[in-house]
Image 1 (cartoon, rainbow, N blue to C red):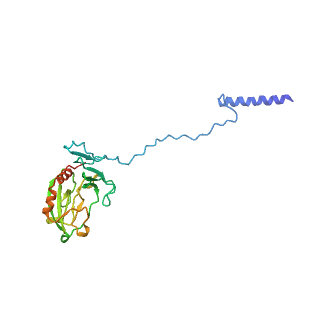
Image 2: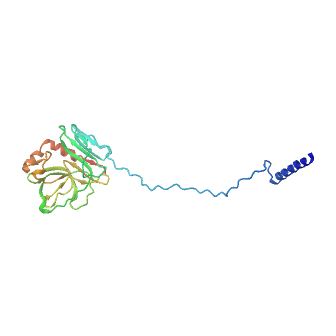
Image 3: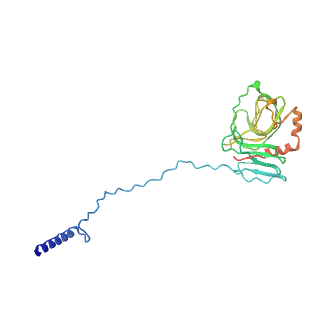
Length: 260
């Protein structure tokens, strides 16, 4: 009975030997099946996505300005977009809430004298006014002072002029005064509904103003407030603006520099 068992073992060994010989592999094991692999496809290189966002353009900046004369200091905003000189005992305060009439991202500052009285405001990115003025609604105005200022203007509308510092009166039941920079004439035949103290600047500045108010109109008694400066006659206004403090105001405003 032992002989048949011996034959089966030998036969099995011969089958294994034959399988090894046919495979040509010394480590072949019965029951192994090489994994079937799909033909590999050539790798395709994925190109990096092309950025379509424009590179942010740097804003122009003012250079360092020379130190002003004795008793004066220079103010420049953090972005170096605007700069001007002022008396050393005057202060510049940011206006946190300038109210309506301005586009987003503008600069807003108030200049106070040593007594804390507001003497000028500086604004950029002012929303342009769209006032219609009928000739019979216009009020006479008078220019008391006018001088050129070296600040940028892109104004091309009818009535535009090279930027100037102006002091003007408009006549209502009294003579109302205002001063500031402008690049527009007041109106035809020295009559206007509104006198604008604004200059059309480059795109990053927009419409800007440096003066005691952005716009001046003739008021009636119900519209007059505590901050309104008015005079009974032109001569009275001239006396007021011949005083030394207005020379300081004029020098401060005409020292304005705007990055372009």
